Length: 268
Image (cartoon, rainbow, N blue to C red; front, side):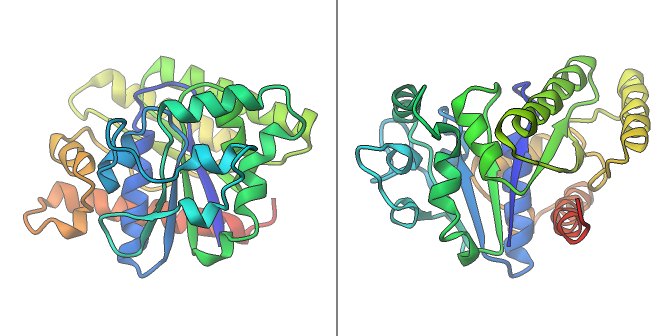
């Protein structure tokens, strides 16, 4: 069993797309997957289970983290649209409200880790989708995970903010004794026709080599079809009209999942 957090402090790099793509790839391979939505926007929750801020789930991550309710994690887990993928849904605005009540409380950063640890072995893979930032909610995701998958765009800002995420991880080890190895980097939203993207992709590869960090799968090219499938919560393998380009992307998601597993087999 592996718990991976998909992260980058920059918004819009495609963390939710990568999380859902990997969940579908793992389910297609026969794995049992739990996806945890720690983003108060709840995009992943809405996509794979149809819950919204106006039609919320009966229980959510907010209830699990709330020290007043202390809801067991398994009681908040719901089925997704796909067999093999379970979801711990976002609490939308309620998640932020609970986060505010936890601020300054002892052990607040480890609330999710404590709730997940006793039941995590029910799944083969746990994927935690995060929002931008390093406040209490993302820190809970980091503290609960075995490793981190960093999503990067071939853009200078995404790379710079990714470096800030790495520094935030280093602070977890320095101040909270939490070692969070990087399983690898995933390049998303590549536009093949852009020369600057090619240049930044090469730079990312050089940085990965210098830091001895694996690149997980091939770069994911920007695709309207992939975006539409993500919005409706469908896996590429479930789409009968998948183009050759989409099938290549499906293989990339499988490679990412395989890379996550391989990273756990290597001593940190």
